[in-house]
Image (cartoon, rainbow, N blue to C red; front, side, top):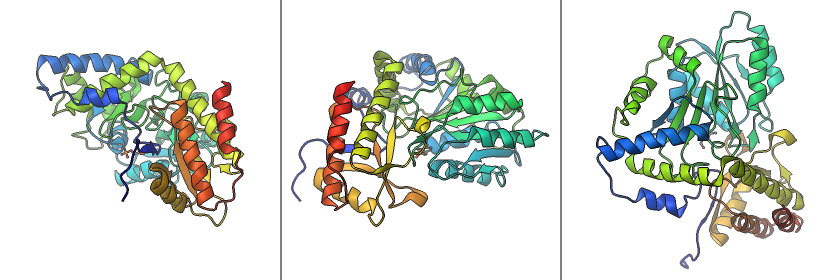
Length: 390
Ligand SMILES: Cc1ncc(COP(=O)(O)O)c(C=O)c1O
């Protein structure tokens, strides 16, 4: 095989490209996680993390992938048999619901059906909550950005509906592919538990995940009866006060986290969100210029972090991805679950500049042509015009 030159283009919607300065920060020697240097790092980190979540409350860090933080959100707040309402927005909302069922929560009738092309429906939520006059639904779970579809749910509207119906359920939100790339505000939007992961907008390798926790969620913890040991918030929150953890933390990932958070702060979160929105708009311009269809159907819900593209009938998205990988050394996201082979996903989140996006879209355009997909040639040009124009 001819040796590769240049960098691999990792344009899946996470894990994302890790900036060199984050890699360098992580390459520092491992230190004593009970020593003064590490304690100081933990205290600095916890302070710096709050603004990224938009919270002044506790943020619990786990040495685990996002799936662990999903489980933590449920076991810390709920009891066996509690009803949990969720929305069929795509692959990840479906998996989170299945997890809730496996943990002994009641999910049977409380799954709002969806077509995987729209976000969580506030009107459907209003109806379901109004019908639950005995307040048996204990939590509403929403995936903010459905990584499988490129659709971003409107969390403030979900919150508004919950407030208007006066329903006391907790609001649990998965921001695994939105935190640090799409506007998100834990406190202001009245979210009770925010679930996040390190490997997407936070520009780190996989391996850390998070729960931001409201006072109401902490109160729910006191009465919740699902078993929890490793995932229990309280020992972590207690130990964190002294700058330590109740287990061996992922020292070097935490070095990287401090660097990544400082990069976000330096750019300024509003600028980070605007950059992602702009890259997403340029990507949609490319897709439309090729004469293809974006999977997301609601203009208000286009994701800033990825775009899922529908393949024309009779063309296989995985064949296209294989050609692009072999010819141009670029990885694109596969269609997940029921979308397998029918869509491909362009990740445009994390550490990304205009020319990385332009290169990505050039690779997609050439791949489409090589795969014999009937496309118009104006996609890349339309994207460049967007990038140049704003
Ligand atoms: C929205 C969303 N939720 C949950 C997960 C699961 O996280 P992990 O694979 O880190 O366990 C992912 C992974 O991509 C995701 O995108």
